[in-house]
Each structure stands twice: as C-alpha cells, then as structure tokens.
Image: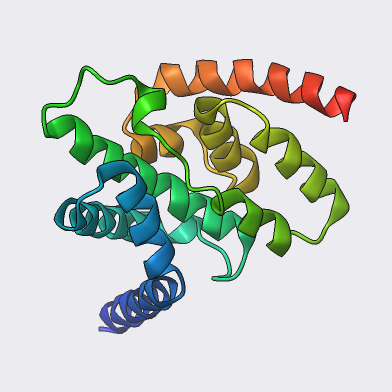
Length: 178
C-alpha cells in the first residue's frame, strides 16, 4: 500500500514537472518543430512525440530554467520533427537540409549559462557540426549515457559511441584554439 502511494506521488510530481517544462518551453518547442516541418499540424505532432520522449527520461532533466534542460528539449524536438519529416516520404533530403536550426536556440543557452568553464565548453560545442553538437551536448551537459542518447535520438548505440569519440577529439582541438 505504501509503495503504491509513493509511485502515485512520484507520477504526480513527474506530471507537474512536465507541465512546468511545457509551459516554459512550449513556444520554443513549436518554433523548433516549425523550422523543420513548416506545417503546423506536423509540428504539433512533433511536439507531442517529444513530450512523450521527455516524459520517459524525466530523471535526466534538472531545473526548468537550466541551460541543459533547454538543450535537451531542443534536441528531442528536433529529432521528433526530423522523424516526422522522413516518414512523410522526403527521405532524399540530406540531414543538413532538414535541420535548419533556429538562430536563437543556442544564444538562449549561452545567456543562461553563467559559469565561465561551462560557458567555454558550451561555446566550443556550439562551433561543432550539428551531429556532434547534439551528441556532445547530451553527453556532457545533460550527462546522458550513450545508450540513453541512442534512445533519445533514435540512432544505433555504436553510432552514438563513435560520434562521442570523434566529437571529443574535435572538442579538445577546439578548446585548445579558444
């Protein structure tokens, strides 16, 4: 009986946090999805799919106003939108063509980020290609495991590990240059 109450309480808290995140970032989520899909109905579907994905990984989300949360949410919405785009039969487009990143996303993260060391790393990650940027943001800033990243981005586990290793080398080089 106690266990059931604890589970219900935890579920209620997770639901409240998810609602809080949606209230804070709902417009940003729609904007990210619209930049990729260009149709409101599809963008709403992408936001809905991303909320389901975020709900499955509530344990990795910190405070609502944390820059890591913004980064995580943008990555999840972006990939949900790309999945919908590909399912619509537009598979001949390249990843770079699909992913037209809104200009403000990473600027918001930099403004929120106050620590100089983390800000330096975030700046270096933002200079990398999109694929490495997403994987490294989720790995370093959100502290997700490669398996969790593979689940969130719907990519094979070994691909994620390779991207982390290659991205890590590029990040080291970039940090030396800064």
